[in-house]
Each structure stands twice: as C-alpha cells, then as structure tokens.
Image 1 (spheres, rainbow, N blue to C red):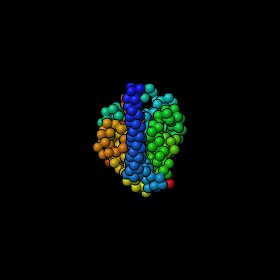
Image 2: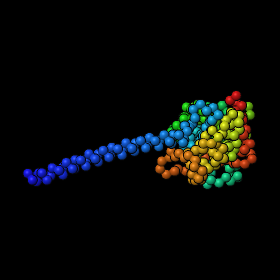
Image 3: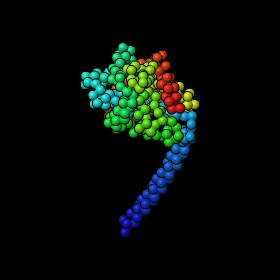
Image 4: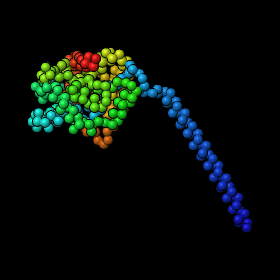
Length: 310
C-alpha cells in the first residue's frame, strides 16, 4: 500500500501537468488565430481590392504569345495554313526556324527580321481577308484553344468581372488576335496590320510590326481615345521587350517571365506569376522591329481599331 501511496500523487501530478499543457496549447492556438486574423485585416487595408469594381477609367492589356497562350500565335496560324496547303514543308521549316531564332537569340537584327517579315507576308499575299478570317476560326480550334494558360485567363476574367475592358496587345496579325480575343470574351485586340486593297492582302504592312515600344504607343493611343487613366490600368507580359508597355501602367505584371523581365520585375517590385511547369521550353514568336516606324505603326493600329469600334 505504501508503494501505491507513493505512486498516486505522481499520477495526480502528471494529470495536472497534462491539463496545464492542454490549456496552454489551446490558449496559444487561440492567440495565433487572432494574430493571423489581425494580420489579414491589416494586409487587406494596405492592399486595396484590385481590380477595382466599376472603375471605368481602368483597363487591362495582355500580351499574347507565352502570356495568354503557350507558344506563338503566328506559328500556330502558319501550321494551320500549311495543313491547308498554302505553302510547302520547306517554307514551314524555314518559317519555324526564323521564329525560334528570334526568341532564342533575343537579338533584333534588322536584316534577319526583314527576311522573316517578308516570309510571313508572302504566305497571305493575294488571299482575301475574309478567307483568312474564316480559316483563322478553324485554326484557333485546332491549334490554339487548348494552349490558353488557365491562370492568365483567370486574371483577364477578373478584370472583365470588375466591369473593365480587356485588350490583347500583340505582334501577331490583328485578324488572328481579334479572333482569339473574341473567343476568350475579351474586349478586342491591338495587332500588326497587314495592308489590304479591296479586301485582298498586298503582302505589305501598315507601318511596322506591333512590337516593343510600338506596343506602348498603341496602348497610349488607345487609352487617350478611350479616356483611360493609365495609372489605374494593368498590363501583363512574359517578355522584356514589353517593358515599355508594362512601365506605362500603374499595375504591371510579369507572367511566365523571361530572364531579363524577371530580373527587372524583381528590381521594381512588380508582381510575378509563373504558370509553367518543369523546364522552360524554347519559345517562338514573330520577329519585329522597334524604332520610329514601329511607334507610328503602333499608334495607327490603336487609332484604326478604335475608329472601327465606333
């Protein structure tokens, strides 16, 4: 009995310590929960809701290739035209290599870009605009619909749900960009304008490809025509070539960024989103030139599209 008496107080002591430990854990959990709620409230207060619902002077501008869609729209379009025997396999191979070289090298060599532009334009020269638009609808279903990044699509939808306009801004042909924008339920698209006479492509461009600084000028022109406040607008892109456009708005986002854009975005504390998995694949896109001609082409594209909408 003496032994049992010696054990009993220890058992009671152990029970008391267990109760104390349980109460302490519960109090710590409650305190932690309250602190988390307080932190969330402070964060919400520091970061106002975005996009802002009902802000009619705000809009969003999305690059297309590798931002909204995996790969380059112009290459997918070329695949569709090849399937329909618009050109031979060797031309498709040459075209694909030109796109890949530009994206991988990251160097805007004027002679190489001129050759690539001529190659792309020669494909559609002599064809009717209406014909290419009809084919473009089919090509979207065949090669593009399954390549839309769900994450970027959700970002665009958030702006639409907030009552804001959402535009694609791309070096891809404006006809292709317009099809993609409409299929995604977006407001419209700014893209490279190919010259046509009486509804037939001439094989020449109006201005220059909508690339780099030209995109920024197109966005600036459209914002002025639409009465937008760029400080309240957002822009999204994967490429350092679009830093001029991203720098133009109050809410720049780097989406699936290349190395140069990622570094720039981090330095300026821009928001980043990366929807890729595994090793980054080589990206292809349309070669394009910057400069005075590009700026003029960008402004013309924005104003022309605005006038058509009116």
